[in-house]
Image 1: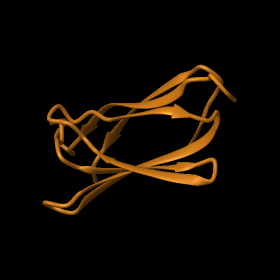
Image 2: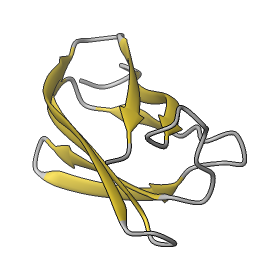
Image 3: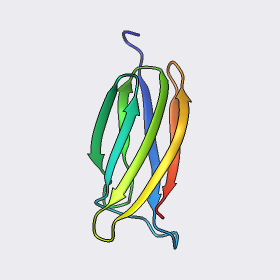
Image 4: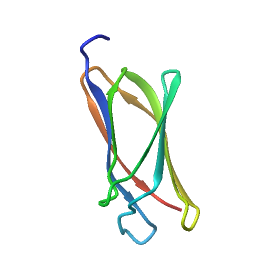
Length: 88
């Protein structure tokens, strides 16, 4: 998979009322590794340079301990998977 750029982007992390959530912890798992990060001031986040394969995405907002999860999804060679998550 050399020289192949595959990525997963948050379109947005939203609260139950549809508002964006900045500063939430984000975890991407799959293909034998876990990657962590934070949403930006617009509730967005991206993971770039991933191997093609199956991934799961989760987010946690610590201020009120809300959680969001995206079940398994596939990212192919050269693809960008775009995902919105909604906190519960």
